[in-house]
Length: 295
Image (cartoon, rainbow, N blue to C red):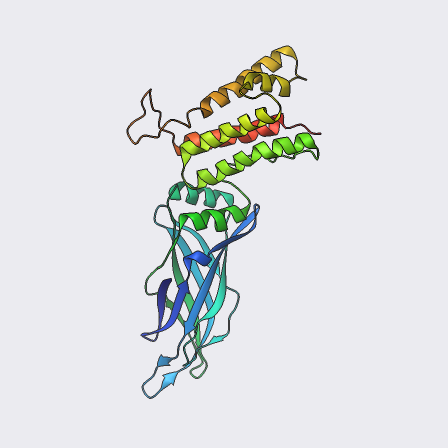
């Protein structure tokens, strides 16, 4: 449980907590939202004679990442949370609106690691007895480290987008459509592998997408014939050039089975990088959009 404090008149009166395993993604691809389930304890501050109560009226924050610095901010709707001597944690849902550009920047920096978020809070306090407003800040940043698997499954996937997805594919409602949809399941698997930083496995999974399609269409181990079949309505010259483009991508995907090495790339064992995997994903999205029949 990540935790930080805000001082109220030199007393650690406001405690802020976030459970990293409860962080969630939501919203839509056009408006992705990061939800931080904040738990807040608000104790009275200490006066000369007795405890002094107050109200928490506003709470805002800035999100930072160690690699890219500040990338988002939020402010909760107006509050009227009163301090209480009996300690308990109340739930406040923090909603951080993001966009594709910031998510891509964050994901490129995160790569295959856990998601590290730093939150700096500011709060507005109202002392009813004194008729006075005061502003306070978190003593130290709230360090939220979301496990990689949780981030991929419960945040990234719930946004319904991928930092590399470029096209939308509509599968026809038919047996052929189901064949393509089944093969495309490997592409979705490759997206998840990409998010987890398994770059060479991305290429292998994409290769299986094409091979699964060929198998379903009766062209097992015959990709050239499979592509010829899918491009059958093309004229001779366009068909030849399109087939060679698809075969070139398929051959590139065969780099996946090679073991990734940390040393500089060699002719025998090419190192598969994030850029390689992104290229393969983008090209495969485009190919499936290109070859998927309309009916």
